[in-house]
Length: 444
Image (cartoon, rainbow, N blue to C red; front, side, top):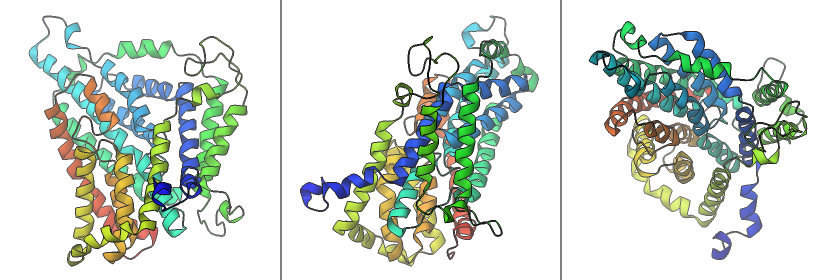
């Protein structure tokens, strides 16, 4: 569209679809697919859950911890796809309970199922923003900030504030889900916990394979390189000082590309290639083709859209519309921004990537007119893009949770509203007191 309007040439538009941030997204997606391909995520989940036993509150806690860990490095959709079936299989379905089972036990089964499924859906969203590569809006912010300021947001720098925020919000999710859906006596809930099916599923897993070790080592190396590229520890200023042209995207693509060259020892798994045939490499293109090309195009399109809006001057016109907000105090402006983005993400647009693509460039331009550091609005807005808790269609984990059929819309709306309020308050407080310290800009 921009070339037709005479704003930008085709070459100028195309470069936004192949920059360091896009390489970061591509490499991260391929690494995540490798984890799924060799069943590492499922093995971890089954191993931890079966160690807990029939303790409902502890089970919920462990499920959330596993989901949070996976969600930091995989897409929320992939994490929900793995964890939700495990949660639903933990509770004996109503139609499989004996006719003489008391009503309070049946109600406990229903409530516990709701609590498990909802806490996983919410944890998928809250854990995604904990790392810079955990969810689309984070990577859109990284690309936008690099494009507008020429500076990188460090992986460890982001982790320093986002991981504690994610952990605190997950504690709120746990307390809310336990208080609402796990309030029956432990002895009652334990009667409907079906651990046998998970033990059988765990027993069917193959022995730990060399390919799984290779994938884990690649992911560990990738994360270590991300965290140490710009970190300053005493005399050590990060390896990025010696390789200034290497970005996080280069690291991700190099680690992902290495998987295509690494020989596989066993048979090829079902994801990518026919089952039972010899798999010559840990990763092949059949498996890599499972990645979300639509998300890649959406993120790249967002960068191109942002550049066109900036070049046309439309961003300045939109920013001037926010000038009346100058009369508001800074902390009120930040709070209004968070609330609006949460509302838009939850009820107007069912894609946090789409919301980030539209909202972040506008906020970036508006910050100067509001006499604020752009990061003071961009970072809380980016976090708010991941706070879709109320609507069943607002985010894939919510849709997956609702598709299980164990809950009504009112269950998700009422519980999600409580989580959203906690998320808004925590994000607001972090944006005022923690984020300015981490990113070294003046507070309100």
